[in-house]
Amino acid sequence: MTEKITPLKTQKVLDLCSGIGGFTLGHLISGGFETVAFCEINQYCQQVLNLRFPHIPIIPDIHDITTESLARIGVGEVDGIIAGLPCPPFSLAGKRLASQDSRNLFGEFFRIICEVRPQWAIVENVPGLLTAEGGQFFRAVLWEFASLGFDIEWGVLSANQVGAIHKRERVWIIAHSQSSRRHTSWYSETQERTNAASVGGCHTHANQDRCQQQLQETNKRGHKPRLRIGQYEISFSQSTFRQQYDGLSKQLDRYLMRQPDVDGWLSAASIPSFNRLNCNEIAALTPDCQKEYRQLYAEYQSIRRQHKQQLMALGNAIVPQCAALIFERLKTIFKQQQKNS
Image (cartoon, rainbow, N blue to C red; front, side, top):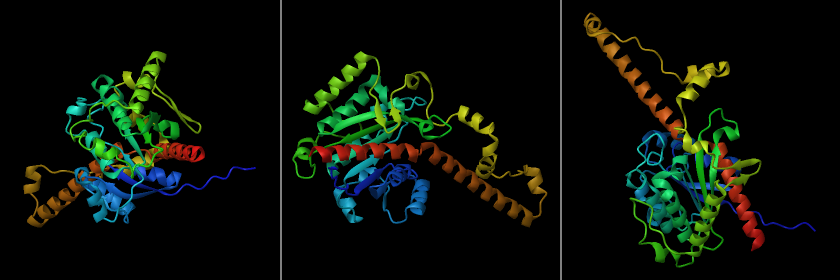
């Protein structure tokens, strides 16, 4: 007799630090999820989101997200939160100030979890998150999830594992809970704990003990936890900590230039040339020609600024195919919970 599995309900998702929507595109590939609101402060990224998802509201500032502000834009129940939190505080290319960096939004992220009370959450960041502050920051993140009653899985997935030509390793954290979070007192016990500057302090909790034990066991074995998603094995590679590599790189640029099949793409993405004149040459022009020259130069500068915004947005974007694998893993967790209930 075939076991009957009730279809999973569509999960309503709050997308934080949305960028140009790579995280949401990932769950559209996977299916079974619906983004009900974005949070993104960058104006160029907001334009892309409005163009790509005109029906989904955007809250610009993460500090403004509360149940009341969500209700004002028609968002009620939220099942899960996804977040590609800013990576500069942890990036190997930066100063790695972590909890001392004003761009660290993990505190706000946990405040919102306490406010919204989701059943699950997914966080994406750079591999430098693992070793920031000697590994203590990442440990505090795991403890914070555990203190809120979440079980946690984490690992590293690279873009080249899903067919991309660049490496782009990223840490993925999946936090999930089997118990209902909307009808318990867990929030009142923890609402004073988190602030916007850093991850909250460590608390004694059964889940924290399990998390601590897992960390100790994996350290004894000499490797980091692994997570299998279908045919893909997500793991912490040793090269993550040795290489001064973080996302797109000069090596990638050189690789692209050697590939004849991407010449068209490179040409389409390039900035049009502009023959600048010196002061004497401009003075020699007629007034009408000077006006036309200045107008053309202003348009050229505008194109350069937009091109820079495009490159920054793409450089910070989540690879949708990677996110899709993470959502597939989350659905597997849901099915297992349903089977055990």
